[in-house]
Image (cartoon, rainbow, N blue to C red; front, side, top):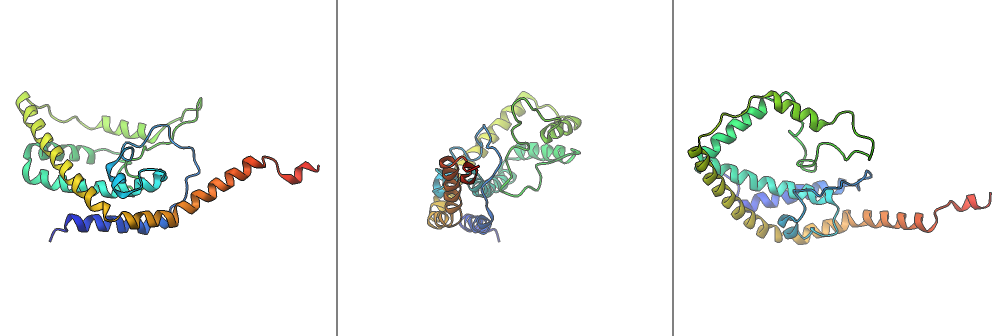
Length: 217
């Protein structure tokens, strides 16, 4: 029997709560571009962690919840939108034919993030994972062209899929609000103390830029 939307949202939050105690602040440089999955996300607003929460914490939850929406839309598409489903099947077969697929089987905390870090100014990478992925994509044959009539029909089905995704997303956010207290409690327990410790360490280093023991030398 298919699990209800309420059950799937609850299980996704449970999985994120089990992961959260393992979270640690990133020590590398932040990216200059915002995450398209998390920036301004209604999912994170519903969860109550859209402000002043580290992106890594946000991303792990938003990805799990977005997967629920994607799966619901995929079921709706397979049952009601044959042309769109055919296009998706062809695209999936094309993707499977690639010799290099670095985005597959990623943990939710990394899914949807850029494959490569930002390069240092004036020091470009010799090669990047994204370049390897693009080269593999170019090796696979393109999808067959569509007639103008088929394109119009496909656009109609895409619009229907988008409408359904919006409906599911609205319902998921409504369900997520009920989990907000335990989400915020977990952030307060596992995340906020680490951020406070980092800020205290930073403040101490700014107040005393030199080791006091060096002043007597």
